[in-house]
Amino acid sequence: MTDNVVVALSCGTDNPNRATRGLFFAMMAHKQGKSASVFLLDEGVFLARKGLAENVQAATGDRADDHLSYLQEFGVPIYVCTPCAAARGIGAEDLVEGAEMATGDRFIHLACDGAVISL
Image (cartoon, rainbow, N blue to C red; front, side, top):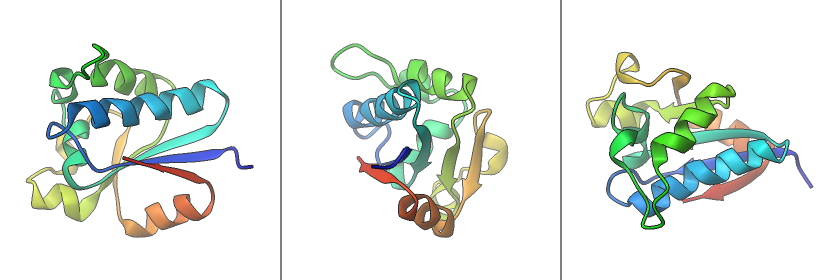
């Protein structure tokens, strides 16, 4: 069993339930003492854009920005796929605090070193 967990999240405003769940699972992994990280790709990169997660809420009522705020507060790494973000007009200056651009190399490194939850 590994203590490293990476949540790969490929949805954002297009699927608020899955987007919120992905951030929730990263938060829960951290709360359980795991070394958690989030890798946002495809539509998921929008979650790292300043102000956008505030508008994402699951059917259960929990909000993506609440989970994102927790991850930021505790320094859980949030990686944003560089080409995915560029294709959507998102630059490093648009990202929330604690998020950073990363390439597929970073994701493969994280995935090979831990458990992957993909949403």
